[in-house]
Length: 107
Image (tube, rainbow, N blue to C red; front, side):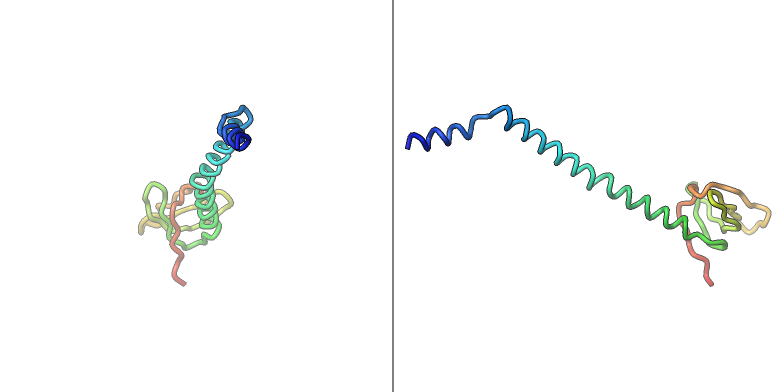
């Protein structure tokens, strides 16, 4: 009986190794939470935007990050030329990263 009491009391005393493992587990848990709630959704969103930009075609209607609607006239590797409004002379070159939404042209 006395041996059992000594073992139970020994298990409740904090030891230096036990505290280190507890801190390590809590740090790993915080990193896991950080990854699943912050980094993972951000990577998914970046992948979705990248796929949208790669699927753009001439004639698609786009919305820029500043809120302007236009039609794609030309697409290069990093840039696009967008025609705004009904005025055929209002064509502005811009970076692909300035496109926030793409609506596919009706065929």
